[in-house]
Length: 512
Ligand code: AMP
Image (cartoon, rainbow, N blue to C red; front, side, top):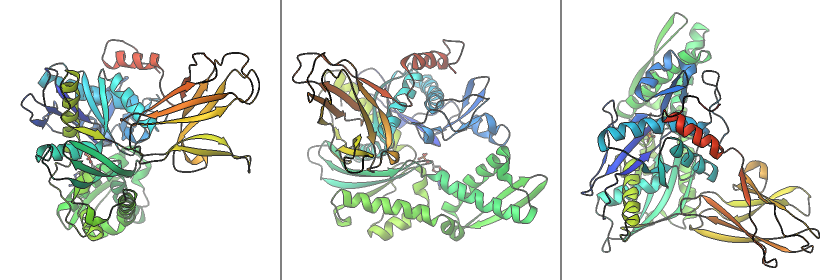
């Protein structure tokens, strides 16, 4: 790779922990330490007077100031506001993520000087709305987001790069990346061949991660506590927060030992409760089973058998749980590969990708190519002629190679029709209610006097990053037609600029 003098920075913006990596001029990729001297930073923000303290300090305050803390904001990406008011304010989740990214930026700048151009990772299973929200978070944190890259792709890239698997003479491999982080689960099958990284299939769950394993322990301990003392620590946010930290710690212990003790204090009562690994496995069996189901389904979606997979790459902190490794061993008959740095590989892959883009921008040939697929089907809402009910018509099925471009022909219903509204969704159901609404594509300015039945072509394009682009053409009318793609939950440009200034400290007031 040829490097520019701009630092190549990759950010893994995780649900529970985040990491920043850099590819240096010698081609070495490493994770940067944060201001506290750690390689990973808790993705937790403690708000005080509209400003956020992010990381370890914020996490410590969970047992005393839980009402001022934003935890797992990534899980709410795509929603209008974070599920809990903080200091009586409703923050959009991407704004909370921007505060976290801002801390990561400042800490990185202490080591490598000014940082503006970055690659940020997203779960492969993130839909279009969540991808846009992540790019917006990056913008509000003062970055220019060069690209977003799927987390499993980044992990595979880091692995391939560090093991010398990139290059003309390397042996082709089908790698299954099992990525179980703090809040999301992704499984992706990639083909690494020469300098090409091609995603064959991807699936996942944006509401499944280590946090759910923690919550099972919280419930187990709290139920025992309630049966003995008739007091429920889950009712008080601070007591719950403290118990959660104890449980998260015990969960890690259970990855290494056969049992762990959890202390619970509430309303003057105290109890130390022991949990064995066997008990923990039993109480979370359904969660592991969900990942098994998705893994097998993805293998089939790629049209492969286990014998076609040369490596099962474990990524994400939660893949350290022995129950995960046992399940994968059992289902695949193979030993999973845990040699990638579970917490750091994703950020490293993002930094390598950033290096490739910067090198390309400087006029050099690409060192490698990433080919992606869409993780959700793209559709438009129409009327079912038989039932007269709204129904989703799929335009681009999931796991289609990107970029992809598809033209959908609509017809004007009446003479002199001046506009058209197309409702765009992502999802696998024919019912719009079970899909994610992406936005309304409004085409407002048809030329006058078009006859009824005039064709209007709407062109949908998934770009390589999984983002959507929409164009409109009316072939029979010799006129420019514009469209306004209005997204349901996204912040306006004015708000994005306002937050960007506020978060960087340039503007005194926030944008509620
Ligand atoms: P990541 O987003 O990849 O940093 O993963 C964070 C998640 O991994 C959190 O839920 C952690 O509790 C979990 N985790 C980290 N280390 C371990 C471990 N040794 N055993 C079980 N879970 C872990």
